[in-house]
Image (tube, rainbow, N blue to C red; front, side, top):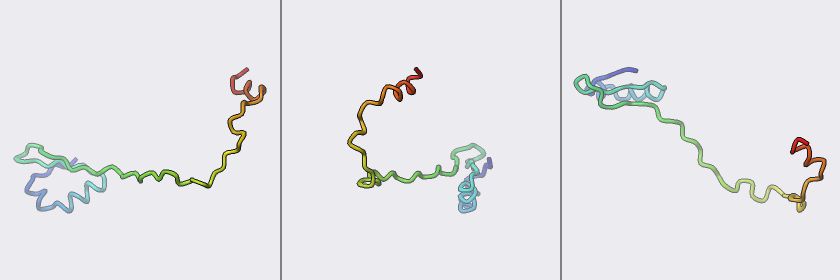
Length: 78
């Protein structure tokens, strides 16, 4: 973690931003006392698209019929 004075941070801002984007954390100090921290942003997750498979899947009519006794016994560990 690098600590820089506020004057040096203003002078070398683009270099410090590049360092932060590369994963480094920079502390900005005023008169030797830390006042701010420059850190990389977390990656932005893409927004979910709902309904992307609409009309592409077909659920059979007998989807929710009870399972046969032998298959049910396998699930229950009997």
